[in-house]
Amino acid sequence: MAVTVSLVALFGLVLFFLLRSHSLGYGSAFVAVMFGFYLASTGASGPVNELTAAVVDALGKI
Image (cartoon, rainbow, N blue to C red):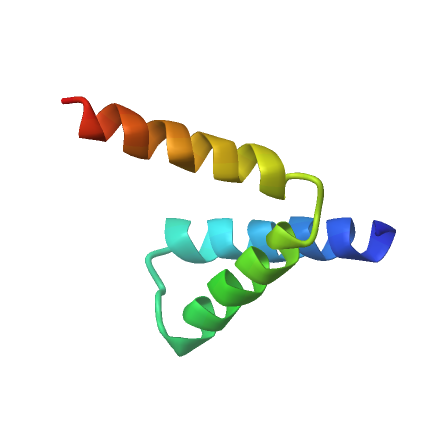
C-alpha cells in the first residue's frame, strides 16, 4: 500500500508539471493513465467515485 501511494504522488506530480508546461504528448498520456491506475487502487477511489457520481447527478438536474 505504501508503494502505491508513493507512485500516485509521483505520477500526480509529474502529470501536474506536464500539464503546467503545456508539453502534452504520448508520454503525458502514459503518465495520466498510470496516475489513474494507481489512484484507483488506493483508498481515494471511493471518494473519487462518489464525487463523480454527485457531479453527474447534479448535471442531470440542471
